[in-house]
Length: 289
Image 1 (cartoon, rainbow, N blue to C red):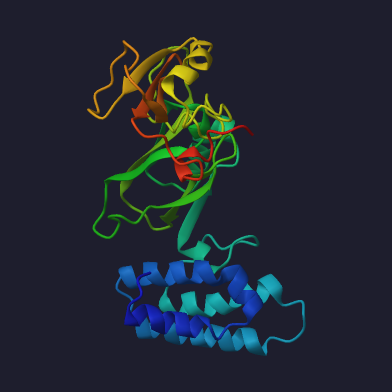
Image 2: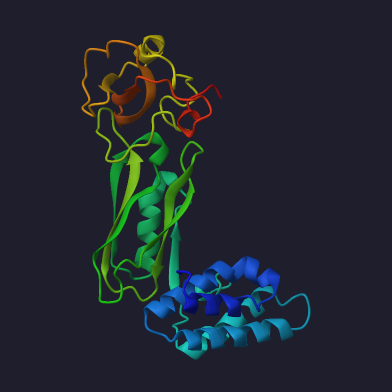
């Protein structure tokens, strides 16, 4: 939700909730407010409903209120605003009445897990798979709407989490409005077959990738060649021209500056005339582990 005056009004109302409630449900309440405003609900009505919910939360007696009161406070808000509550459950707070969170917890069966969940919610979202480099297996590489309804455009948002191999920043879930009526297609990364070209790839020095912990990032090409030869893969060299060439190895004094995998049997290595600084982000995953 942007930092506009309506957004500040809603956030001011949410600050009236107890700290424990805000830490557990604040982000979801902000998300719900943004969806309601996008649907044309007046911000004053949203804020007023949240103020009512905050009063309920403050007045509820005893330490056992927890989820029941947390859900009830936002039920005041969603009920007053006419938001459908079909998806509210013991493990979901009030924003679940407006959105569906689909998160991948089984990378080995990411497509099947997502497809099953979305089908159970009667959403017109198809899930397909494409071959990807190792650290992207089980991640969403392309979430998008193919045929939005009038109010659905741009409304599918992403959730990020850990990647295969340990890096962070992969998309492992989506947030979709429960009332989504358009069509969407989600592409999930799968392990590639031998020789199969990747539809998406991460840095070859990233955790989980072929040159993680190799200590080759920042080394001269001449020093790196013996280790690269042991990989038994085809190498395309990328110089300043931006055009990769299979052979020969770049002449002169070049340093390994980065690279990506192209398939299970080929990689592209970017070289530079200057050695990357040891403390730069580019070299953080290319050292010994």
